[in-house]
Image 1 (spheres, rainbow, N blue to C red):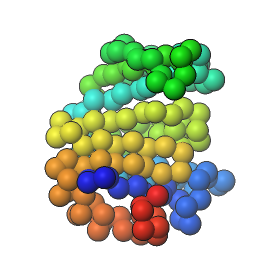
Image 2: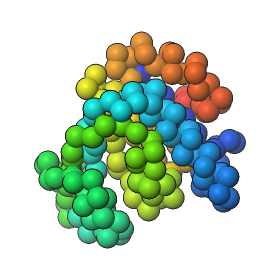
Image 3: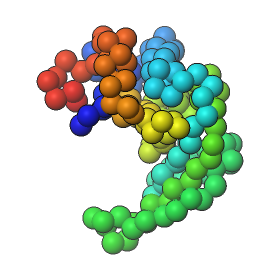
Length: 159
């Protein structure tokens, strides 16, 4: 996929932080990649995609309230007739520090499906264990790849 990169948030592809030092490293990496993809303090859209009846429904509610996310649209899951996904959004300025509690929740798998979209169309999507980015224009991916080369997967497919 042109412009796509996947970064690991801990050395050795470790998925979850076990120590305060590792948790700090996760936040450092996520913030640095977010700055590179979105731009520090840049305006972007924050999206939260939640399945109705989500196991961590209370966590999703707290995030919606904390950031003033509003309902944007919903859609049926194409693989599960009983599952409906709800998308909530708001405009924000990107700052790793401002989103540290949310980023920690994502890293600890307390919440998922959180995306930031820049005005250029780049997407920043952290998850437990890593960060997927989709750079627009795609040529920007090369400079981000070089800057954070040690955090990339060693696999040829980038996973």
